[in-house]
Image (tube, rainbow, N blue to C red; front, side):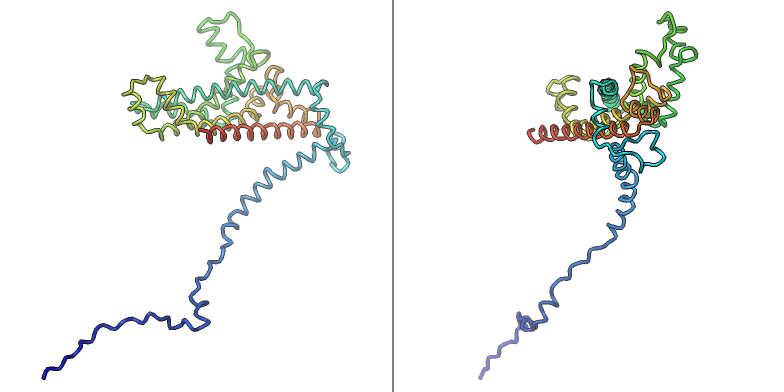
Length: 332
């Protein structure tokens, strides 16, 4: 007689949670939240302290000085300077007065100088970046030469230009008058109407390598296939520049033009070193005008009011520029 036996199968796992009924099981299995480390905040402390010491606190002090009648009679003890409120701003921005007309003249000179300098620096930087986009023998040497003005310290570069532009001993007059015979007499390059153009040349010479560097870096991200496709379609050099290069460099140009504008409009070192702290009327930039109003006449209240007004103007220009460009980008 045969007996049927059932082979024992694998044991089925028990799906019940052994601790399901335990009230402490939920808390035991709940993942712990990681504690927030204080290290990132501690690393930010030195940067915040330096930012307060270098920018924020001097800015607040400058705004407070603009509200005081801080002249040479009170410079030793600020607490004795009377509080005049917005009187310094009214006197400074009154364009019917002599001080207001001088400030307005300095503003227009600075604006024209900035627009010309930024435009020419961008054109030269764009030309250099496009020419050096394709590899050829000697390209590395040309890149190094083009970046030399940007690598030189500002005082070294501007002092060199000051010697070159001297009337009797300068190399510029020696070449133009003695060597090439293009001029009959040696002109004054650092006074009169020529001072503006001399300042513009020095500014463009110093700024265009920065534009060249930024645009050259931007061109590295333009795919070569786009130029090949444009060439197959019959697009020439100018067509490729207008339809491929400039649209692809739009993000770089947006930042580059704003930075160059702010740098040039605020430029103090170039005119100060080139003209020795007393720029001619034709090259009276607003930075030199504020310096002369503050440290030559010892009227630090009016000088601070001019500085605050300049800061507000640049903030408005920057905000307006960013707003317009962002709207155009969103629309595109």
